[in-house]
Length: 321
Image (cartoon, rainbow, N blue to C red):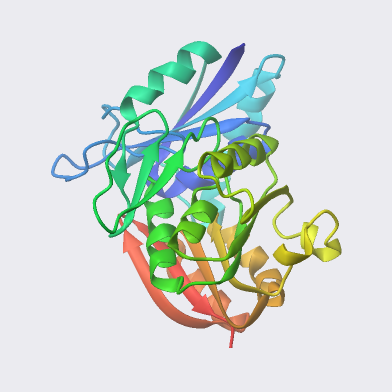
């Protein structure tokens, strides 16, 4: 199968919005390659699907690529994308001197090429994320998450995912019921259970992500403890239709690795599904939205517990009183 590539080169602070636009325009998947200072200790650039080899991106910029199925009207996608990027500054995001380019790639070429860059990685003190095709001998105390992300978000290497996993390591004490909103590859749901949560309802609107998450749940042998369902954020819980009783609210914990704007839209629903004393872990927050997001969550009734930061990203741990 041939996939159309639509690539945006923009400032780091605009990358999540650019990715969001690509999803909204019909992308089946999005990959991100970030620039990094030459003094960075990181071994490779981070991507939503996979690690890419270090590129020659301008410092402070990111390359965001959306993959569109054959038959997509790419000129229309490009036109609408440019218009959206031009309007970003009005919302406090600076895309810089952005560029939009197009191309194509065969699925079989892409599917194999990226695997050479995705290796086992320690994402927290205890959690190791390991691609299913790579061997790894865990040391005492290490918890291994097996993953084949395919075309879904979440390899464990992007700062927003790492922050969520670190927050889970702090928050999971054992026996919790949890909901993972925008589960992607299922990495947070799997990580939560491996850390001791009793069960997780994993939700995503993208059918590719739902399929990928369900596959990764099976890889880790957690079918009885993680339920994967397609849902626009928490909408499925308003009726509860199709959700087994054991996975329905109230929950002890909710995770959401999403855009700051979506986290704010989600906050009231999260408050409703959490039991008193429950924890909400919100990641995907760029530094220029950190204080605004924290303030909005406080105004929604949450009590702030902790902020975790990596690179220019923040994860907020808040609690329902």
